[in-house]
Image 1 (cartoon, rainbow, N blue to C red):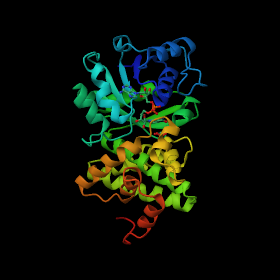
Image 2 (cartoon, helix red, strand yellow; image 1 turned 120 degrees about the vertical axis):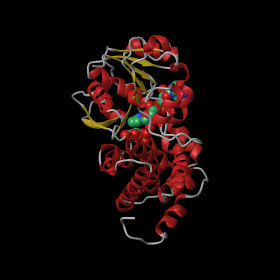
Image 3 (cartoon, rainbow, N blue to C red; image 1 turned 180 degrees about the horizontal axis):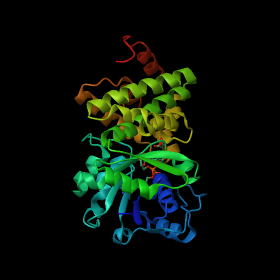
Length: 335
Ligand SMILES: NC(=O)C1=CN([C@@H]2O[C@H](COP(=O)(O)OP(=O)(O)OC[C@H]3O[C@@H](n4cnc5c(N)ncnc54)[C@H](O)[C@@H]3O)[C@@H](O)[C@H]2O)C=CC1
Ligand SMILES: O=C(CO)COP(=O)(O)O
Protein backbone atom coordinates (compact mmCIF):
# COMPACT_ATOMS: atom_id res chain seq x y z
CA UNK A 1 0.00 0.00 0.00
CA UNK A 2 1.11 3.55 -0.76
CA UNK A 3 -0.29 6.49 1.17
CA UNK A 4 -1.75 9.16 -1.10
CA UNK A 5 -3.78 11.28 1.25
CA UNK A 6 -2.89 12.52 4.72
CA UNK A 7 -4.75 14.43 7.38
CA UNK A 8 -2.62 16.47 9.76
CA UNK A 9 -4.41 17.22 13.03
CA UNK A 10 -3.11 20.46 14.53
CA UNK A 11 -1.94 23.48 12.53
CA UNK A 12 0.79 24.62 14.92
CA UNK A 13 4.48 24.84 14.02
CA UNK A 14 5.21 21.17 13.58
CA UNK A 15 1.84 20.23 12.08
CA UNK A 16 2.30 22.94 9.46
CA UNK A 17 5.93 22.04 8.70
CA UNK A 18 5.19 18.30 8.55
CA UNK A 19 2.21 18.95 6.25
CA UNK A 20 4.71 20.65 3.93
CA UNK A 21 7.02 17.62 4.08
CA UNK A 22 4.15 15.27 3.18
CA UNK A 23 3.08 17.56 0.33
CA UNK A 24 6.67 17.71 -0.95
CA UNK A 25 6.66 13.90 -0.88
CA UNK A 26 3.67 13.94 -3.23
CA UNK A 27 0.69 13.47 -0.90
CA UNK A 28 -2.57 15.39 -0.87
CA UNK A 29 -2.70 16.91 2.59
CA UNK A 30 -5.60 18.19 4.66
CA UNK A 31 -4.37 20.31 7.55
CA UNK A 32 -6.98 20.44 10.29
CA UNK A 33 -7.08 23.64 12.32
CA UNK A 34 -9.30 24.12 15.35
CA UNK A 35 -10.41 27.59 14.30
CA UNK A 36 -12.42 27.90 11.05
CA UNK A 37 -10.89 31.30 10.30
CA UNK A 38 -7.38 29.84 10.45
CA UNK A 39 -8.41 26.96 8.16
CA UNK A 40 -9.91 29.46 5.73
CA UNK A 41 -6.75 31.60 5.76
CA UNK A 42 -4.50 28.57 5.09
CA UNK A 43 -6.67 27.33 2.21
CA UNK A 44 -6.94 30.70 0.52
CA UNK A 45 -3.49 32.24 1.11
CA UNK A 46 -1.38 29.03 1.27
CA UNK A 47 0.28 30.38 4.37
CA UNK A 48 -0.39 29.81 8.07
CA UNK A 49 -0.70 33.33 9.47
CA UNK A 50 -0.19 32.13 13.07
CA UNK A 51 2.80 29.77 12.70
CA UNK A 52 5.68 30.11 10.23
CA UNK A 53 3.74 32.89 8.42
CA UNK A 54 6.54 33.64 5.96
CA UNK A 55 6.54 30.08 4.57
CA UNK A 56 4.59 29.52 1.37
CA UNK A 57 2.78 26.18 1.56
CA UNK A 58 2.31 23.88 -1.45
CA UNK A 59 -1.13 24.19 -3.04
CA UNK A 60 -1.70 20.48 -2.41
CA UNK A 61 -2.25 21.41 1.25
CA UNK A 62 -5.80 22.49 1.99
CA UNK A 63 -7.20 23.23 5.41
CA UNK A 64 -10.48 22.64 7.20
CA UNK A 65 -11.81 22.78 10.74
CA UNK A 66 -14.41 20.06 10.10
CA UNK A 67 -13.28 16.63 11.33
CA UNK A 68 -15.29 14.57 8.82
CA UNK A 69 -14.06 16.68 5.92
CA UNK A 70 -10.47 16.46 7.13
CA UNK A 71 -10.60 12.66 7.28
CA UNK A 72 -12.19 11.97 3.92
CA UNK A 73 -10.13 9.29 2.16
CA UNK A 74 -7.19 9.64 4.57
CA UNK A 75 -4.53 6.92 4.45
CA UNK A 76 -2.53 8.63 7.19
CA UNK A 77 -3.79 10.60 10.17
CA UNK A 78 -0.90 12.59 11.61
CA UNK A 79 -1.37 13.87 15.14
CA UNK A 80 0.41 17.17 15.80
CA UNK A 81 -1.18 18.26 19.06
CA UNK A 82 0.73 18.99 22.28
CA UNK A 83 1.25 15.93 24.49
CA UNK A 84 -1.01 17.01 27.33
CA UNK A 85 -3.84 17.83 24.89
CA UNK A 86 -3.61 14.63 22.89
CA UNK A 87 -6.08 12.44 24.83
CA UNK A 88 -8.83 15.03 24.95
CA UNK A 89 -7.97 16.27 21.45
CA UNK A 90 -8.50 12.76 20.04
CA UNK A 91 -12.11 12.50 21.25
CA UNK A 92 -13.78 13.95 18.13
CA UNK A 93 -11.62 11.77 15.85
CA UNK A 94 -12.14 8.37 17.43
CA UNK A 95 -15.43 7.47 15.76
CA UNK A 96 -14.57 8.98 12.39
CA UNK A 97 -11.21 7.36 11.66
CA UNK A 98 -11.09 5.46 8.33
CA UNK A 99 -10.76 1.76 9.27
CA UNK A 100 -7.40 1.22 7.55
CA UNK A 101 -5.76 4.58 8.19
CA UNK A 102 -2.36 4.58 9.89
CA UNK A 103 -2.03 6.96 12.84
CA UNK A 104 1.21 8.89 13.18
CA UNK A 105 2.27 10.63 16.38
CA UNK A 106 4.45 13.72 16.18
CA UNK A 107 4.22 14.76 19.83
CA UNK A 108 7.25 14.53 22.10
CA UNK A 109 6.02 14.24 25.64
CA UNK A 110 4.81 11.97 28.43
CA UNK A 111 1.28 12.37 29.75
CA UNK A 112 0.97 13.87 33.21
CA UNK A 113 -0.61 11.68 35.90
CA UNK A 114 -0.71 8.48 33.76
CA UNK A 115 2.97 8.50 32.68
CA UNK A 116 1.82 7.23 29.30
CA UNK A 117 3.85 7.59 26.14
CA UNK A 118 2.03 9.21 23.22
CA UNK A 119 1.49 5.94 21.35
CA UNK A 120 -0.09 4.49 24.50
CA UNK A 121 -2.41 7.49 24.80
CA UNK A 122 -3.41 7.14 21.13
CA UNK A 123 -4.14 3.45 21.49
CA UNK A 124 -6.23 4.00 24.60
CA UNK A 125 -8.09 6.97 23.15
CA UNK A 126 -8.84 5.46 19.74
CA UNK A 127 -8.65 1.71 20.21
CA UNK A 128 -6.34 1.31 17.18
CA UNK A 129 -4.03 -1.64 17.06
CA UNK A 130 -0.32 -0.88 17.64
CA UNK A 131 0.47 -2.18 14.16
CA UNK A 132 -1.47 0.76 12.72
CA UNK A 133 0.57 3.27 14.69
CA UNK A 134 3.85 5.03 14.00
CA UNK A 135 5.81 7.79 15.71
CA UNK A 136 8.10 10.30 14.04
CA UNK A 137 11.06 11.68 15.95
CA UNK A 138 14.51 13.16 15.37
CA UNK A 139 16.28 16.53 15.03
CA UNK A 140 13.44 18.33 13.30
CA UNK A 141 13.13 21.97 14.33
CA UNK A 142 9.99 23.07 12.50
CA UNK A 143 11.39 26.28 11.02
CA UNK A 144 14.39 24.57 9.44
CA UNK A 145 12.19 21.79 8.07
CA UNK A 146 9.74 24.34 6.64
CA UNK A 147 12.68 26.11 4.97
CA UNK A 148 13.56 22.76 3.40
CA UNK A 149 16.99 22.60 4.98
CA UNK A 150 18.21 18.99 4.66
CA UNK A 151 17.33 16.88 7.70
CA UNK A 152 16.58 13.32 8.69
CA UNK A 153 14.19 11.70 11.12
CA UNK A 154 13.09 8.31 12.39
CA UNK A 155 9.72 6.68 11.75
CA UNK A 156 9.13 3.96 14.33
CA UNK A 157 6.40 1.35 14.46
CA UNK A 158 6.20 -2.09 16.02
CA UNK A 159 5.33 -3.29 12.50
CA UNK A 160 8.11 -2.71 9.99
CA UNK A 161 5.70 -2.37 7.05
CA UNK A 162 3.87 0.46 8.84
CA UNK A 163 7.12 2.31 9.49
CA UNK A 164 8.06 1.84 5.84
CA UNK A 165 4.66 3.10 4.63
CA UNK A 166 4.96 6.27 6.70
CA UNK A 167 8.62 6.76 5.76
CA UNK A 168 7.73 6.51 2.06
CA UNK A 169 4.99 9.08 2.62
CA UNK A 170 7.33 11.68 4.09
CA UNK A 171 10.51 11.08 2.08
CA UNK A 172 11.20 14.28 0.19
CA UNK A 173 14.31 15.88 -1.31
CA UNK A 174 14.90 17.72 1.98
CA UNK A 175 13.68 15.10 4.47
CA UNK A 176 15.22 11.66 4.82
CA UNK A 177 13.28 9.30 7.09
CA UNK A 178 14.90 6.19 8.54
CA UNK A 179 12.76 3.38 9.92
CA UNK A 180 12.86 1.67 13.29
CA UNK A 181 10.80 -0.76 15.33
CA UNK A 182 11.84 0.80 18.64
CA UNK A 183 8.77 2.86 19.48
CA UNK A 184 9.61 3.00 23.21
CA UNK A 185 13.16 4.25 22.57
CA UNK A 186 12.06 6.94 20.10
CA UNK A 187 9.33 8.19 22.43
CA UNK A 188 11.46 8.23 25.58
CA UNK A 189 14.31 9.94 23.74
CA UNK A 190 11.98 12.51 22.15
CA UNK A 191 10.29 13.43 25.40
CA UNK A 192 13.37 13.46 27.63
CA UNK A 193 15.55 15.59 25.36
CA UNK A 194 13.09 18.47 25.91
CA UNK A 195 13.81 18.31 29.64
CA UNK A 196 17.56 18.17 29.08
CA UNK A 197 17.23 21.20 26.74
CA UNK A 198 15.61 23.13 29.60
CA UNK A 199 18.67 22.37 31.75
CA UNK A 200 21.12 23.34 28.98
CA UNK A 201 19.17 26.52 28.30
CA UNK A 202 19.24 27.38 32.01
CA UNK A 203 23.02 26.90 32.04
CA UNK A 204 23.29 29.27 29.09
CA UNK A 205 21.00 31.77 30.82
CA UNK A 206 23.28 31.64 33.85
CA UNK A 207 26.16 32.69 31.59
CA UNK A 208 27.86 29.29 31.58
CA UNK A 209 29.80 28.11 28.53
CA UNK A 210 30.19 25.17 26.22
CA UNK A 211 31.95 22.81 28.64
CA UNK A 212 28.99 23.03 30.98
CA UNK A 213 26.45 22.61 28.21
CA UNK A 214 28.30 19.64 26.74
CA UNK A 215 28.47 18.04 30.18
CA UNK A 216 24.72 18.42 30.68
CA UNK A 217 24.00 17.04 27.20
CA UNK A 218 26.27 14.02 27.67
CA UNK A 219 25.08 13.17 31.16
CA UNK A 220 21.52 13.90 30.00
CA UNK A 221 21.98 11.30 27.29
CA UNK A 222 23.27 8.84 29.92
CA UNK A 223 20.16 9.21 32.05
CA UNK A 224 17.83 9.08 29.01
CA UNK A 225 19.51 5.85 27.93
CA UNK A 226 19.21 4.35 31.44
CA UNK A 227 15.52 5.20 31.58
CA UNK A 228 14.80 4.00 28.06
CA UNK A 229 16.57 0.68 28.54
CA UNK A 230 14.74 0.11 31.83
CA UNK A 231 11.47 0.60 29.94
CA UNK A 232 12.43 -1.87 27.21
CA UNK A 233 14.06 0.35 24.57
CA UNK A 234 16.93 -0.69 22.31
CA UNK A 235 20.10 1.09 23.56
CA UNK A 236 21.19 1.71 19.94
CA UNK A 237 18.26 4.10 19.44
CA UNK A 238 19.89 6.61 21.78
CA UNK A 239 22.97 7.00 19.59
CA UNK A 240 20.74 7.60 16.57
CA UNK A 241 18.74 10.53 15.21
CA UNK A 242 15.93 10.25 17.76
CA UNK A 243 18.51 10.09 20.55
CA UNK A 244 21.72 12.06 20.36
CA UNK A 245 20.61 13.72 17.09
CA UNK A 246 17.54 15.38 18.57
CA UNK A 247 19.33 16.04 21.85
CA UNK A 248 22.01 18.10 20.09
CA UNK A 249 19.52 20.04 17.93
CA UNK A 250 17.20 20.88 20.80
CA UNK A 251 19.86 21.62 23.41
CA UNK A 252 21.97 23.84 21.15
CA UNK A 253 19.48 25.65 18.93
CA UNK A 254 18.06 29.06 19.74
CA UNK A 255 15.03 27.91 17.70
CA UNK A 256 14.11 25.32 20.33
CA UNK A 257 11.28 26.50 22.57
CA UNK A 258 12.50 24.27 25.41
CA UNK A 259 16.00 25.71 25.13
CA UNK A 260 14.55 29.22 25.15
CA UNK A 261 12.43 28.56 28.24
CA UNK A 262 15.58 27.31 29.98
CA UNK A 263 17.54 30.42 28.99
CA UNK A 264 14.75 32.63 30.34
CA UNK A 265 14.70 30.78 33.67
CA UNK A 266 18.50 30.93 33.90
CA UNK A 267 18.33 34.68 33.44
CA UNK A 268 15.98 34.94 36.40
CA UNK A 269 12.57 35.07 34.71
CA UNK A 270 9.58 33.35 36.26
CA UNK A 271 8.15 30.32 34.50
CA UNK A 272 4.89 32.14 33.76
CA UNK A 273 6.71 35.11 32.19
CA UNK A 274 9.05 32.98 30.12
CA UNK A 275 6.38 30.57 28.84
CA UNK A 276 4.07 33.48 27.97
CA UNK A 277 6.83 35.26 26.05
CA UNK A 278 7.34 32.18 23.85
CA UNK A 279 3.62 31.51 23.29
CA UNK A 280 4.13 28.02 21.88
CA UNK A 281 4.42 24.52 23.25
CA UNK A 282 7.54 23.71 25.32
CA UNK A 283 6.88 20.08 26.18
CA UNK A 284 9.67 19.69 28.74
CA UNK A 285 7.82 22.03 31.09
CA UNK A 286 4.77 19.78 31.32
CA UNK A 287 6.49 16.42 30.84
CA UNK A 288 9.38 16.70 33.30
CA UNK A 289 7.30 15.56 36.28
CA UNK A 290 5.86 12.54 34.50
CA UNK A 291 9.32 11.51 33.25
CA UNK A 292 10.66 11.77 36.81
CA UNK A 293 7.76 9.63 38.03
CA UNK A 294 8.41 7.03 35.31
CA UNK A 295 12.07 6.91 36.33
CA UNK A 296 11.21 6.56 40.03
CA UNK A 297 8.86 3.70 39.24
CA UNK A 298 11.57 1.99 37.17
CA UNK A 299 14.19 2.60 39.88
CA UNK A 300 16.36 4.73 37.56
CA UNK A 301 18.37 7.77 38.72
CA UNK A 302 17.73 10.84 36.55
CA UNK A 303 19.44 13.70 38.40
CA UNK A 304 19.19 16.25 35.59
CA UNK A 305 15.47 15.59 35.08
CA UNK A 306 15.10 15.87 38.86
CA UNK A 307 16.93 19.21 38.81
CA UNK A 308 14.66 20.50 36.06
CA UNK A 309 11.58 19.50 38.06
CA UNK A 310 13.01 21.41 41.03
CA UNK A 311 13.51 24.47 38.81
CA UNK A 312 10.27 24.32 36.80
CA UNK A 313 7.76 22.85 39.24
CA UNK A 314 9.18 23.84 42.63
CA UNK A 315 10.59 27.19 41.49
CA UNK A 316 14.12 26.58 42.82
CA UNK A 317 16.84 28.92 41.59
CA UNK A 318 18.89 27.41 38.75
CA UNK A 319 22.26 28.35 40.27
CA UNK A 320 21.51 26.31 43.40
CA UNK A 321 20.56 23.36 41.23
CA UNK A 322 23.80 23.57 39.24
CA UNK A 323 25.73 23.47 42.53
CA UNK A 324 23.76 20.46 43.74
CA UNK A 325 24.45 18.54 40.53
CA UNK A 326 28.19 19.20 40.87
CA UNK A 327 28.27 17.97 44.45
CA UNK A 328 26.72 14.59 43.74
CA UNK A 329 28.65 11.53 44.80
CA UNK A 330 31.38 10.70 42.28
CA UNK A 331 31.03 7.45 40.37
CA UNK A 332 32.29 5.58 37.29
CA UNK A 333 31.15 7.28 34.10
CA UNK A 334 29.38 4.23 32.73
CA UNK A 335 26.81 4.13 35.59
N1 LIG B 1 7.89 22.70 16.61
C1 LIG B 1 8.83 21.79 16.43
O1 LIG B 1 9.93 22.13 15.95
C2 LIG B 1 8.59 20.36 16.74
C3 LIG B 1 7.58 19.98 17.60
N2 LIG B 1 7.41 18.67 17.91
C4 LIG B 1 6.34 18.25 18.81
O2 LIG B 1 5.09 18.43 18.16
C5 LIG B 1 4.06 18.65 19.13
C6 LIG B 1 3.27 19.88 18.71
O3 LIG B 1 4.16 20.97 18.79
P1 LIG B 1 4.06 22.28 17.93
O4 LIG B 1 3.30 22.11 16.68
O5 LIG B 1 5.42 22.80 17.80
O6 LIG B 1 3.22 23.19 18.96
P2 LIG B 1 2.56 24.57 18.71
O7 LIG B 1 2.43 25.21 20.03
O8 LIG B 1 3.26 25.30 17.62
O9 LIG B 1 1.11 24.18 18.14
C7 LIG B 1 0.24 23.33 18.83
C8 LIG B 1 -1.03 23.14 18.02
O10 LIG B 1 -1.92 22.26 18.72
C9 LIG B 1 -3.21 22.83 18.74
N3 LIG B 1 -3.95 22.38 19.92
C10 LIG B 1 -3.75 22.75 21.20
N4 LIG B 1 -4.65 22.15 21.99
C11 LIG B 1 -5.43 21.37 21.19
C12 LIG B 1 -6.53 20.53 21.43
N5 LIG B 1 -7.03 20.33 22.64
N6 LIG B 1 -7.09 19.90 20.38
C13 LIG B 1 -6.60 20.09 19.15
N7 LIG B 1 -5.55 20.88 18.87
C14 LIG B 1 -4.97 21.52 19.88
C15 LIG B 1 -2.95 24.33 18.75
O11 LIG B 1 -4.10 25.03 18.29
C16 LIG B 1 -1.77 24.43 17.78
O12 LIG B 1 -2.25 24.45 16.46
C17 LIG B 1 4.78 18.81 20.47
O13 LIG B 1 4.68 17.62 21.18
C18 LIG B 1 6.24 19.08 20.09
O14 LIG B 1 7.15 18.61 21.06
C19 LIG B 1 8.20 17.69 17.39
C20 LIG B 1 9.20 18.01 16.51
C21 LIG B 1 9.47 19.36 16.12
O1 LIG C 1 11.53 18.60 18.84
C1 LIG C 1 12.06 19.57 18.37
C2 LIG C 1 13.22 19.47 17.46
O2 LIG C 1 13.47 18.16 17.09
C3 LIG C 1 11.56 20.92 18.69
O3 LIG C 1 12.05 21.34 19.90
P1 LIG C 1 11.27 22.45 20.74
O4 LIG C 1 9.91 21.89 21.03
O5 LIG C 1 12.10 22.66 21.95
O6 LIG C 1 11.20 23.67 19.87
